[in-house]
Amino acid sequence: MNTESAEKARTWSAVARRVAGHSLERSFYTDRNFFDLDIAAVFARQWIFVAVDAELPEPGDYATVEVGPYSVIVLRDDEEELRAFHNVCRHRGARILEAGNGSVGNLVCGYHKWTYGTDGALRHAPSQPPGFDRGCFGLKAVHVRSVGGLVFVCLAEEPPADFAEVAARVEPYLLPHQLRRAKVAARTDLVEDGNWKLVMENNRECYHCDGHPELLRSFFPTYGYTEENLPARLRPAHERYRRADAEMRETYERLGLPYALIEELDGRTTGFRIQRDALDLAGESFTPDGTAACRRLLGDLPTPRLGHLALHLQPNSWFHVLGDHAITFSVLPLAPDRTLLRTTWLVHPEAEEGVDYDLDTLLKVWTATNEQDARLVARAQQGVSSPAYEPGPYAETEYQVEAFCAWYIDRLREELQR
Ligand code: 3BY
Ligand code: FES
Ligand code: FE
View (cartoon, rainbow, N blue to C red):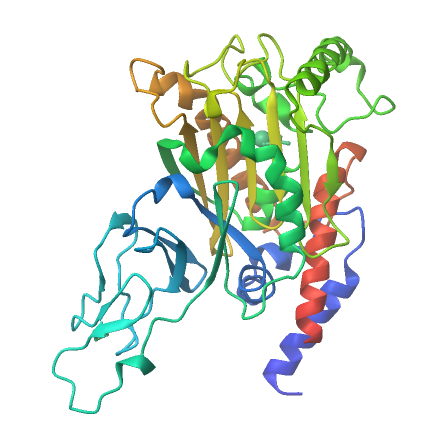
Protein backbone atom coordinates (compact mmCIF):
# COMPACT_ATOMS: atom_id res chain seq x y z
CA MET A 1 0.00 0.00 0.00
CA ASN A 2 1.40 3.43 -0.85
CA THR A 3 1.44 6.17 1.80
CA GLU A 4 -1.61 7.90 0.41
CA SER A 5 -3.86 4.86 0.45
CA ALA A 6 -2.52 3.82 3.87
CA GLU A 7 -3.50 7.27 5.11
CA LYS A 8 -6.94 6.96 3.54
CA ALA A 9 -7.42 3.53 5.14
CA ARG A 10 -6.52 5.00 8.55
CA THR A 11 -8.99 7.85 8.02
CA TRP A 12 -11.72 5.43 6.93
CA SER A 13 -11.24 3.23 9.97
CA ALA A 14 -11.36 6.25 12.34
CA VAL A 15 -14.63 7.32 10.66
CA ALA A 16 -16.01 3.76 10.81
CA ARG A 17 -15.00 3.39 14.49
CA ARG A 18 -16.99 6.47 15.51
CA VAL A 19 -19.43 5.47 18.27
CA ALA A 20 -22.70 7.44 18.20
CA GLY A 21 -23.37 9.32 21.42
CA HIS A 22 -19.66 9.66 22.17
CA SER A 23 -17.16 12.42 21.50
CA LEU A 24 -14.77 11.99 18.57
CA GLU A 25 -11.38 10.32 18.76
CA ARG A 26 -8.23 12.36 19.28
CA SER A 27 -7.04 12.36 15.65
CA PHE A 28 -10.12 14.30 14.48
CA TYR A 29 -8.98 17.22 16.63
CA THR A 30 -5.21 17.04 16.30
CA ASP A 31 -4.16 15.58 12.92
CA ARG A 32 -3.18 17.63 9.91
CA ASN A 33 -4.78 14.96 7.69
CA PHE A 34 -8.15 15.45 9.34
CA PHE A 35 -7.73 19.21 9.14
CA ASP A 36 -7.16 18.92 5.37
CA LEU A 37 -10.08 16.51 5.05
CA ASP A 38 -12.33 18.90 7.01
CA ILE A 39 -11.47 21.65 4.54
CA ALA A 40 -12.18 19.38 1.56
CA ALA A 41 -15.29 17.66 2.98
CA VAL A 42 -16.88 20.56 4.83
CA PHE A 43 -15.45 24.02 4.17
CA ALA A 44 -14.94 23.57 0.42
CA ARG A 45 -18.34 21.84 -0.03
CA GLN A 46 -20.90 23.51 2.23
CA TRP A 47 -22.38 26.98 2.38
CA ILE A 48 -20.17 28.83 4.88
CA PHE A 49 -21.32 31.91 6.79
CA VAL A 50 -18.64 34.59 6.29
CA ALA A 51 -20.03 38.14 6.48
CA VAL A 52 -23.10 40.34 6.75
CA ASP A 53 -24.65 42.49 4.02
CA ALA A 54 -24.32 45.47 6.36
CA GLU A 55 -20.51 45.29 6.00
CA LEU A 56 -20.85 45.90 2.28
CA PRO A 57 -23.52 48.57 1.86
CA GLU A 58 -22.04 50.40 -1.19
CA PRO A 59 -20.71 49.34 -4.61
CA GLY A 60 -17.01 48.51 -4.28
CA ASP A 61 -17.23 47.57 -0.59
CA TYR A 62 -15.48 44.28 0.04
CA ALA A 63 -14.50 41.83 2.77
CA THR A 64 -11.79 39.21 2.36
CA VAL A 65 -12.21 35.92 4.17
CA GLU A 66 -9.72 33.12 4.69
CA VAL A 67 -11.26 29.65 4.58
CA GLY A 68 -8.41 27.19 5.20
CA PRO A 69 -6.01 27.63 2.28
CA TYR A 70 -8.59 29.62 0.30
CA SER A 71 -8.93 33.37 0.33
CA VAL A 72 -12.22 34.78 -0.91
CA ILE A 73 -13.23 38.34 -1.78
CA VAL A 74 -16.89 39.10 -1.05
CA LEU A 75 -17.84 42.27 -2.87
CA ARG A 76 -20.77 44.55 -3.68
CA ASP A 77 -20.56 45.09 -7.46
CA ASP A 78 -21.46 48.23 -9.44
CA GLU A 79 -25.04 46.93 -9.79
CA GLU A 80 -25.22 46.56 -5.98
CA GLU A 81 -25.31 42.77 -6.24
CA LEU A 82 -23.16 40.53 -4.07
CA ARG A 83 -20.28 38.77 -5.81
CA ALA A 84 -17.50 36.56 -4.54
CA PHE A 85 -14.18 35.69 -6.17
CA HIS A 86 -11.10 33.71 -5.33
CA ASN A 87 -8.56 36.25 -4.10
CA VAL A 88 -5.99 34.86 -6.54
CA CYS A 89 -4.65 36.87 -9.45
CA ARG A 90 -4.96 35.29 -12.90
CA HIS A 91 -1.44 36.50 -13.78
CA ARG A 92 0.96 34.76 -11.39
CA GLY A 93 -1.41 33.99 -8.58
CA ALA A 94 -0.68 36.69 -6.04
CA ARG A 95 -3.27 37.63 -3.46
CA ILE A 96 -5.08 40.57 -5.00
CA LEU A 97 -6.42 42.22 -1.85
CA GLU A 98 -4.86 42.07 1.58
CA ALA A 99 -6.82 40.70 4.53
CA GLY A 100 -9.62 42.82 5.94
CA ASN A 101 -12.44 45.03 4.68
CA GLY A 102 -12.31 48.06 2.42
CA SER A 103 -13.71 49.78 -0.63
CA VAL A 104 -12.35 49.81 -4.19
CA GLY A 105 -13.30 51.11 -7.65
CA ASN A 106 -11.54 48.19 -9.35
CA LEU A 107 -9.66 45.22 -7.95
CA VAL A 108 -5.99 45.94 -8.61
CA CYS A 109 -3.42 43.23 -7.94
CA GLY A 110 -0.64 44.58 -5.77
CA TYR A 111 2.05 42.67 -7.71
CA HIS A 112 2.00 43.79 -11.39
CA LYS A 113 -1.24 45.79 -11.36
CA TRP A 114 -3.55 43.54 -13.34
CA THR A 115 -6.88 45.30 -12.88
CA TYR A 116 -10.29 43.63 -12.57
CA GLY A 117 -13.78 45.19 -12.52
CA THR A 118 -16.21 44.56 -9.68
CA ASP A 119 -17.75 41.94 -12.02
CA GLY A 120 -14.42 40.04 -11.98
CA ALA A 121 -13.59 40.78 -15.63
CA LEU A 122 -9.95 41.59 -16.39
CA ARG A 123 -9.99 45.21 -17.56
CA HIS A 124 -6.31 45.97 -17.90
CA ALA A 125 -3.06 43.99 -17.96
CA PRO A 126 -0.05 46.25 -18.50
CA SER A 127 2.35 45.56 -21.39
CA GLN A 128 0.75 42.40 -22.73
CA PRO A 129 1.46 41.63 -26.41
CA PRO A 130 -1.15 42.38 -29.08
CA GLY A 131 -3.61 39.52 -29.33
CA PHE A 132 -3.65 38.93 -25.58
CA ASP A 133 -7.22 37.89 -24.76
CA ARG A 134 -8.33 39.54 -21.52
CA GLY A 135 -11.59 37.61 -21.75
CA CYS A 136 -9.73 34.41 -20.77
CA PHE A 137 -8.44 35.79 -17.48
CA GLY A 138 -11.40 36.93 -15.40
CA LEU A 139 -11.35 36.20 -11.67
CA LYS A 140 -12.63 32.80 -10.63
CA ALA A 141 -16.11 33.21 -9.20
CA VAL A 142 -17.29 31.71 -5.90
CA HIS A 143 -20.98 31.10 -5.17
CA VAL A 144 -22.39 33.72 -2.80
CA ARG A 145 -25.83 34.51 -1.43
CA SER A 146 -27.48 36.52 1.25
CA VAL A 147 -30.14 35.05 3.53
CA GLY A 148 -31.99 37.91 5.23
CA GLY A 149 -28.76 39.97 5.43
CA LEU A 150 -26.42 37.07 6.33
CA VAL A 151 -23.82 36.33 3.66
CA PHE A 152 -22.78 32.78 2.76
CA VAL A 153 -20.23 31.54 0.23
CA CYS A 154 -19.81 28.08 -1.24
CA LEU A 155 -16.47 27.06 -2.74
CA ALA A 156 -17.83 23.93 -4.43
CA GLU A 157 -18.59 23.92 -8.12
CA GLU A 158 -22.01 22.54 -7.29
CA PRO A 159 -23.32 23.84 -3.97
CA PRO A 160 -25.58 21.66 -1.79
CA ALA A 161 -28.99 21.65 -3.42
CA ASP A 162 -30.99 21.94 -0.20
CA PHE A 163 -29.63 25.33 0.91
CA ALA A 164 -32.28 27.24 -1.06
CA GLU A 165 -35.00 25.40 0.85
CA VAL A 166 -33.31 26.15 4.21
CA ALA A 167 -32.98 29.81 3.21
CA ALA A 168 -36.69 29.94 2.32
CA ARG A 169 -37.64 28.50 5.70
CA VAL A 170 -35.30 30.73 7.71
CA GLU A 171 -35.86 34.04 5.93
CA PRO A 172 -39.40 34.71 7.27
CA TYR A 173 -37.95 34.60 10.81
CA LEU A 174 -35.15 37.04 9.93
CA LEU A 175 -36.89 39.55 7.68
CA PRO A 176 -38.78 41.52 10.40
CA HIS A 177 -35.35 42.50 11.85
CA GLN A 178 -34.20 43.98 8.51
CA LEU A 179 -30.57 42.98 8.96
CA ARG A 180 -29.88 43.81 5.30
CA ARG A 181 -30.12 47.52 6.17
CA ALA A 182 -28.59 47.34 9.66
CA LYS A 183 -25.37 48.99 10.79
CA VAL A 184 -22.29 47.14 12.02
CA ALA A 185 -21.73 48.46 15.56
CA ALA A 186 -18.68 46.27 16.19
CA ARG A 187 -16.80 43.22 15.03
CA THR A 188 -14.28 41.15 16.98
CA ASP A 189 -11.89 38.40 15.93
CA LEU A 190 -11.00 35.91 18.62
CA VAL A 191 -8.41 33.22 17.85
CA GLU A 192 -9.22 30.17 19.95
CA ASP A 193 -6.62 27.54 20.83
CA GLY A 194 -8.72 24.60 19.72
CA ASN A 195 -9.96 22.67 16.70
CA TRP A 196 -12.94 24.25 14.91
CA LYS A 197 -15.16 21.29 15.85
CA LEU A 198 -14.54 21.89 19.55
CA VAL A 199 -15.68 25.49 19.05
CA MET A 200 -18.87 24.30 17.36
CA GLU A 201 -19.52 21.48 19.84
CA ASN A 202 -19.12 23.89 22.73
CA ASN A 203 -21.76 26.17 21.22
CA ARG A 204 -24.22 23.31 20.83
CA GLU A 205 -24.85 22.68 24.53
CA CYS A 206 -25.65 24.55 27.71
CA TYR A 207 -24.30 21.76 29.95
CA HIS A 208 -21.38 24.11 30.63
CA CYS A 209 -23.49 27.27 31.00
CA ASP A 210 -22.57 27.72 34.69
CA GLY A 211 -19.37 29.12 33.22
CA HIS A 212 -21.35 32.09 31.80
CA PRO A 213 -22.57 34.20 34.75
CA GLU A 214 -23.10 37.34 32.59
CA LEU A 215 -25.03 35.47 29.89
CA LEU A 216 -27.20 33.62 32.42
CA ARG A 217 -28.68 36.88 33.71
CA SER A 218 -30.86 36.89 30.56
CA PHE A 219 -30.31 33.48 28.90
CA PHE A 220 -32.31 30.62 30.42
CA PRO A 221 -29.89 27.87 31.54
CA THR A 222 -32.69 25.36 30.90
CA TYR A 223 -31.77 25.50 27.19
CA GLY A 224 -31.37 21.97 25.80
CA TYR A 225 -33.11 20.21 28.70
CA THR A 226 -36.53 18.57 28.71
CA GLU A 227 -39.03 18.31 31.59
CA GLU A 228 -37.71 14.76 32.11
CA ASN A 229 -34.00 15.47 32.34
CA LEU A 230 -34.09 18.94 33.91
CA PRO A 231 -31.82 19.05 36.99
CA ALA A 232 -33.60 20.06 40.25
CA ARG A 233 -31.41 23.17 40.60
CA LEU A 234 -32.88 24.53 37.34
CA ARG A 235 -36.54 24.20 38.49
CA PRO A 236 -36.92 27.86 39.53
CA ALA A 237 -35.45 29.04 36.21
CA HIS A 238 -37.76 26.63 34.40
CA GLU A 239 -40.80 28.10 36.15
CA ARG A 240 -39.74 31.61 35.09
CA TYR A 241 -39.14 30.27 31.59
CA ARG A 242 -42.64 28.79 31.35
CA ARG A 243 -44.29 32.08 32.29
CA ALA A 244 -42.08 34.11 29.92
CA ASP A 245 -42.58 31.58 27.13
CA ALA A 246 -46.39 31.75 27.39
CA GLU A 247 -46.30 35.54 27.22
CA MET A 248 -43.82 35.58 24.33
CA ARG A 249 -45.96 33.22 22.28
CA GLU A 250 -48.87 35.64 22.63
CA THR A 251 -46.65 38.52 21.54
CA TYR A 252 -45.31 36.58 18.54
CA GLU A 253 -48.84 35.62 17.50
CA ARG A 254 -50.07 39.19 17.88
CA LEU A 255 -47.19 40.63 15.85
CA GLY A 256 -47.21 37.82 13.28
CA LEU A 257 -43.59 36.89 14.05
CA PRO A 258 -42.66 33.30 13.15
CA TYR A 259 -41.42 31.47 16.26
CA ALA A 260 -41.93 27.70 15.95
CA LEU A 261 -38.91 25.49 16.57
CA ILE A 262 -37.49 23.80 13.49
CA GLU A 263 -34.68 21.40 14.33
CA GLU A 264 -33.14 19.45 11.44
CA LEU A 265 -29.52 19.35 12.51
CA ASP A 266 -28.48 16.08 10.92
CA GLY A 267 -29.76 13.65 8.32
CA ARG A 268 -29.65 16.38 5.69
CA THR A 269 -26.89 18.26 3.85
CA THR A 270 -27.61 21.69 5.30
CA GLY A 271 -28.38 21.08 8.98
CA PHE A 272 -30.10 23.90 10.86
CA ARG A 273 -32.09 24.85 13.93
CA ILE A 274 -34.21 27.95 14.39
CA GLN A 275 -36.45 29.15 17.20
CA ARG A 276 -37.74 32.41 18.60
CA ASP A 277 -37.60 32.05 22.35
CA ALA A 278 -38.02 33.95 25.63
CA LEU A 279 -35.23 35.63 27.58
CA ASP A 280 -35.19 36.11 31.37
CA LEU A 281 -35.80 39.32 33.41
CA ALA A 282 -36.94 42.18 31.14
CA GLY A 283 -36.74 39.68 28.26
CA GLU A 284 -35.40 42.23 25.78
CA SER A 285 -31.67 41.75 25.41
CA PHE A 286 -28.40 40.28 26.69
CA THR A 287 -27.86 42.85 29.46
CA PRO A 288 -27.58 42.47 33.28
CA ASP A 289 -31.29 43.32 33.76
CA GLY A 290 -32.47 42.07 30.38
CA THR A 291 -33.42 45.54 29.09
CA ALA A 292 -32.55 46.68 25.57
CA ALA A 293 -28.93 47.75 24.95
CA CYS A 294 -30.00 49.89 22.00
CA ARG A 295 -32.93 52.32 22.03
CA ARG A 296 -33.58 52.19 18.27
CA LEU A 297 -35.07 48.80 17.48
CA LEU A 298 -34.15 46.70 14.46
CA GLY A 299 -36.65 46.98 11.62
CA ASP A 300 -38.60 49.50 13.73
CA LEU A 301 -40.16 46.60 15.64
CA PRO A 302 -42.94 47.83 17.95
CA THR A 303 -41.55 46.41 21.22
CA PRO A 304 -38.14 45.38 22.53
CA ARG A 305 -39.62 42.53 24.58
CA LEU A 306 -39.21 39.84 21.96
CA GLY A 307 -36.72 37.43 23.53
CA HIS A 308 -34.28 36.20 20.93
CA LEU A 309 -34.32 34.45 17.61
CA ALA A 310 -31.67 31.73 17.81
CA LEU A 311 -30.38 30.27 14.55
CA HIS A 312 -27.80 27.49 14.37
CA LEU A 313 -26.41 26.31 11.05
CA GLN A 314 -24.05 23.49 10.22
CA PRO A 315 -21.15 23.73 9.79
CA ASN A 316 -19.84 27.06 11.05
CA SER A 317 -22.31 29.57 12.46
CA TRP A 318 -24.86 30.67 14.99
CA PHE A 319 -26.88 33.84 15.44
CA HIS A 320 -28.86 35.67 18.10
CA VAL A 321 -31.32 38.17 16.63
CA LEU A 322 -33.12 40.37 19.14
CA GLY A 323 -35.45 43.36 19.04
CA ASP A 324 -32.63 45.84 19.66
CA HIS A 325 -29.60 44.19 18.06
CA ALA A 326 -28.28 41.07 16.38
CA ILE A 327 -25.07 39.11 16.86
CA THR A 328 -23.54 36.82 14.26
CA PHE A 329 -20.83 34.22 14.85
CA SER A 330 -18.62 32.77 12.12
CA VAL A 331 -16.18 29.95 12.86
CA LEU A 332 -13.20 29.54 10.50
CA PRO A 333 -10.48 26.91 10.91
CA LEU A 334 -6.88 28.19 10.96
CA ALA A 335 -4.93 25.05 11.95
CA PRO A 336 -5.79 21.72 13.62
CA ASP A 337 -5.56 23.46 17.00
CA ARG A 338 -6.45 27.07 16.08
CA THR A 339 -9.78 28.59 15.06
CA LEU A 340 -11.02 32.08 14.32
CA LEU A 341 -14.32 33.14 15.88
CA ARG A 342 -15.59 36.31 14.20
CA THR A 343 -18.42 38.05 16.06
CA THR A 344 -20.42 40.93 14.58
CA TRP A 345 -22.94 43.17 16.39
CA LEU A 346 -25.67 44.83 14.29
CA VAL A 347 -27.98 47.68 15.25
CA HIS A 348 -30.56 49.88 13.52
CA PRO A 349 -28.89 51.85 10.67
CA GLU A 350 -29.64 55.18 12.36
CA ALA A 351 -28.76 54.13 15.91
CA GLU A 352 -26.05 56.44 17.20
CA GLU A 353 -23.32 55.30 19.52
CA GLY A 354 -23.38 57.25 22.78
CA VAL A 355 -26.96 58.40 22.08
CA ASP A 356 -28.99 55.25 21.37
CA TYR A 357 -26.51 52.71 22.71
CA ASP A 358 -23.40 52.48 24.79
CA LEU A 359 -20.88 50.30 22.97
CA ASP A 360 -19.48 48.69 26.14
CA THR A 361 -22.95 47.67 27.30
CA LEU A 362 -23.82 46.30 23.87
CA LEU A 363 -20.64 44.19 23.63
CA LYS A 364 -20.19 43.18 27.24
CA VAL A 365 -22.12 39.92 27.62
CA TRP A 366 -21.04 38.16 24.45
CA THR A 367 -17.46 39.39 24.72
CA ALA A 368 -17.30 37.82 28.19
CA THR A 369 -19.15 34.70 26.98
CA ASN A 370 -16.84 34.24 23.98
CA GLU A 371 -13.76 34.57 26.21
CA GLN A 372 -15.18 32.04 28.68
CA ASP A 373 -15.97 29.66 25.82
CA ALA A 374 -12.48 30.14 24.36
CA ARG A 375 -10.96 29.05 27.69
CA LEU A 376 -13.18 25.95 27.75
CA VAL A 377 -12.29 25.12 24.15
CA ALA A 378 -8.53 25.48 24.88
CA ARG A 379 -8.96 23.18 27.87
CA ALA A 380 -10.78 20.62 25.77
CA GLN A 381 -8.08 20.80 23.07
CA GLN A 382 -5.36 20.22 25.67
CA GLY A 383 -7.22 17.26 27.12
CA VAL A 384 -8.11 15.52 23.86
CA SER A 385 -4.48 15.89 22.68
CA SER A 386 -3.33 13.46 25.37
CA PRO A 387 -2.84 9.81 24.31
CA ALA A 388 -4.81 8.99 27.47
CA TYR A 389 -7.97 10.63 26.08
CA GLU A 390 -10.76 8.34 24.96
CA PRO A 391 -14.16 9.41 23.62
CA GLY A 392 -16.66 9.93 26.44
CA PRO A 393 -20.49 9.74 26.49
CA TYR A 394 -22.70 12.78 25.85
CA ALA A 395 -25.38 13.72 28.36
CA GLU A 396 -28.96 13.88 27.06
CA THR A 397 -28.79 17.66 27.07
CA GLU A 398 -25.83 17.42 24.67
CA TYR A 399 -28.04 15.99 21.90
CA GLN A 400 -27.13 18.88 19.59
CA VAL A 401 -23.42 18.06 19.98
CA GLU A 402 -24.23 14.51 18.90
CA ALA A 403 -26.24 15.92 15.97
CA PHE A 404 -23.24 18.05 14.95
CA CYS A 405 -20.83 15.10 15.11
CA ALA A 406 -23.24 12.76 13.28
CA TRP A 407 -23.69 15.40 10.56
CA TYR A 408 -19.91 15.89 10.33
CA ILE A 409 -19.16 12.15 10.10
CA ASP A 410 -21.72 11.90 7.27
CA ARG A 411 -19.87 14.65 5.39
CA LEU A 412 -16.55 12.79 5.80
CA ARG A 413 -18.17 9.56 4.56
CA GLU A 414 -19.51 11.36 1.51
CA GLU A 415 -16.11 12.85 0.76
CA LEU A 416 -14.23 9.58 1.19
CA GLN A 417 -16.68 7.87 -1.18
CA ARG A 418 -16.27 10.44 -3.93
O1 3BY B 1 -25.11 30.53 21.57
C1 3BY B 1 -25.90 29.65 21.87
O2 3BY B 1 -26.62 29.18 21.03
C2 3BY B 1 -26.01 29.13 23.26
C3 3BY B 1 -25.44 30.02 24.29
C4 3BY B 1 -25.11 29.13 25.39
C5 3BY B 1 -24.97 27.79 24.85
N1 3BY B 1 -25.45 27.82 23.49
C6 3BY B 1 -26.43 26.81 23.27
FE1 FES C 1 -1.18 39.79 -10.06
FE2 FES C 1 1.08 39.73 -11.41
S1 FES C 1 0.40 38.34 -9.93
S2 FES C 1 -0.50 41.19 -11.53
FE1 FE D 1 -20.63 28.66 26.21
